[in-house]
Image (cartoon, rainbow, N blue to C red; front, side, top):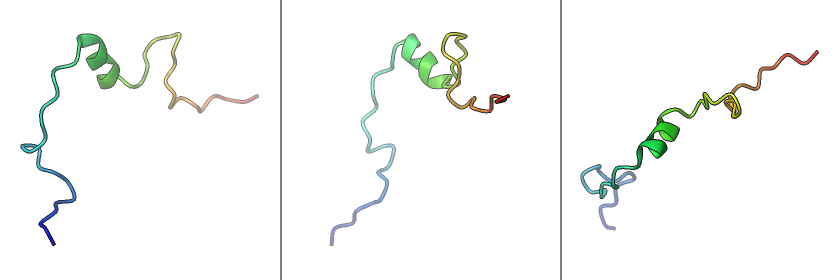
Length: 48
């Protein structure tokens, strides 16, 4: 049985090209600060 690692080393994983600032902002800020696009995690709205 070959030596298979459950998770490959970061050194073995080819680095992806740097994403555009737009994509970085979207990935770094998944909370959705856009007023037209509220965060999906904010589901604790009071139901009266």
